[in-house]
Image (cartoon, rainbow, N blue to C red; front, side, top):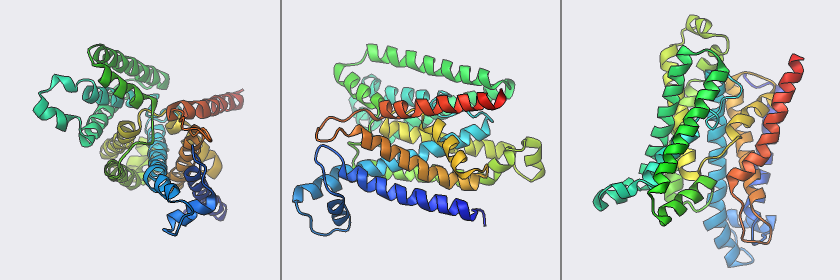
Length: 343
């Protein structure tokens, strides 16, 4: 069996923490609802107040599900990129994928006025938003991969990613200049990141896209394990490098593009979670890391979303700010730890 006894215990512990944080997330907000009441509502039992049932089922439950989906998708996409590029600092945000997605979404939201009204309503639909975001992410990733074939220096790749982010930011700035106040307001709120305000139809589209991305990722875990030992070794094991790279890129673009389309750009999750998961499970086996990232990514996003909720107040902090506040110290610690090993 792949998991050792200790790893099974860790995975079980993370699963129980996930359930605990899920209920904590549902009970926290402007209206405090007791754990017992949340559990009763989830089991479709009678609640002390009908309004609590409405709040949990129609507002907090969709948001918690989105947090789990985003945590899973970004963590796994970070793991895929770090192995594919053999770069521990690679993630969708650092390499400019999120910026590519943002540009795609900006074209849909801010550039909608460039299209005739008859097709504008289709162009600004949820599916169009996802397709634009995935296409933007995919385009940047292919360019990065093309550069990586010519340039072996990982630092150069990161700089290229940052330049793409700057380029995409400049184009978004130009679009913003010519946009209406309403379009600007919509895009600004989207760029701050939010896990709420999604309908069940949006969540169904999001779930379907992320499921496809995770399924493709799972199919290529064996190739990822082989790539850790170099392309020549992977070829000797019968791995089709070209095909594997293509589908790993596709999976990453679907996962990060879908998250960015529905929840906005969310930093540090794709970078920090794969490292922490690797430290917790003490392995490089991607079959174990895949499930570890699913669990730990969900826990961290639920925790960040819970912190966003100001107790007793309707005020909600932007999720992107919280993930950056939590993630930045972790990344600095990882860098210092790595430097310490070298000294």
